[in-house]
Amino acid sequence: MCATGPRWRFCGAPVALRITAKRASPHQIAERSTMTEDKQTSPDEPTVAPPAEVPRVGRRHRRWPWIVAAVVLSPIAVVALWTVIALAYTYSHGDRAGYVQKFSRKGWICKTWEGELAMVNIPGTTPQMWDFTVRNDSVAQLLSHSMGQRVSLTYDQHGGVPTSCFGDTQYFVTGVHVLGP
Image (tube, rainbow, N blue to C red; front, side, top):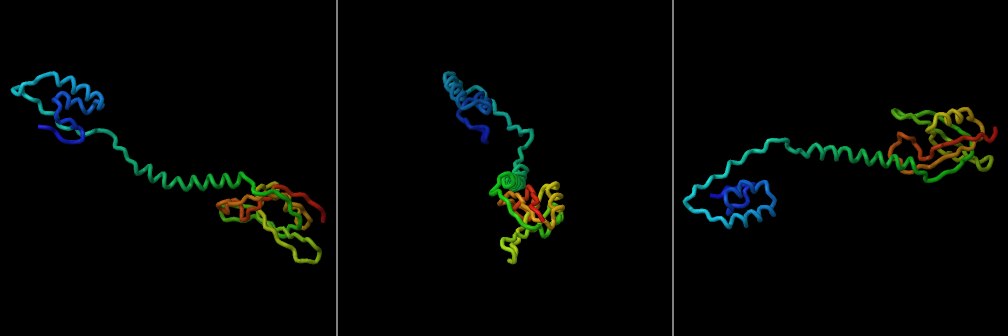
């Protein structure tokens, strides 16, 4: 009688081959089956029943914690990588001149310096307002001391920053030069 189950695949093989078949590769089994065909067994010889299947004792591999971790950590990693790339590369670099109208430190959790620069092209016209962000405290201190004076601000534009934690605008001031009163 042939045993059934995932470990017993060779029912026509002799008992010795069936017992060792679960540990052998298919190539080794083919070699053994050709070697045992030469032996003749008589039908009067008693046959030994294969041992009962022993349950595997060991650690079960659980995949769901890894899947949950991947689902949770993948978006976090993507946003972090996106933020690093957006802040590392500059879309544009330039200077703007005008009068600083408003400058304050804003934010509930992430505090940044935010300001407005009034750019006047022709005297007597309405000034164009330009919003900017300052991330460096030393530049913010220079800018707060030059309020009311005509200044030139050097800035970098970082487009695509995914959160407002780094600033409300995409224009980050990196330098201040006082032009005069």
